[in-house]
Image 1 (cartoon, rainbow, N blue to C red):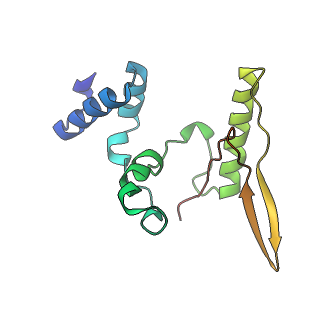
Image 2 (tube, one colour):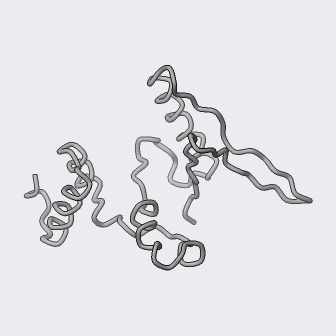
Amino acid sequence: MMSQVPDPAARAWYVEQATRYGWSRSVLTHHIGTDRFQRVGQAPDNFTATVPGGEQDLVREVLADPYDLEFLALDPAHSERQLEDALVAKLSAFLTELGQGFAFVGRQYRLPVGDREFFADCSDSRIIPIPLEVAA
């Protein structure tokens, strides 16, 4: 499998990541196929301004990689709302398939403030908020 990766630095990175995170063969194959090595750390972020100094690299490693969302079959010029709609549809179907004890409970809540609108994500200790932004 690693012979599919011609770059020695990329090969070493995949081996290290697979060992560190316990990737299965199928996960490793997926990451090689989607060229994760080239994508890691490439997404724009505001972590320098919003995350304490020592934690920026960790947060960037965990959250900020461009994700491969080809499975959503979106137009390349999709809006943030279209991305959210497609992800929510897939997530809702997945949670329904899991059965009892799992549910999709909501999206963003509109908060009008003066002549502006803000949208807050529903969040508590058992709900996982997923922030979405489309790169410009």
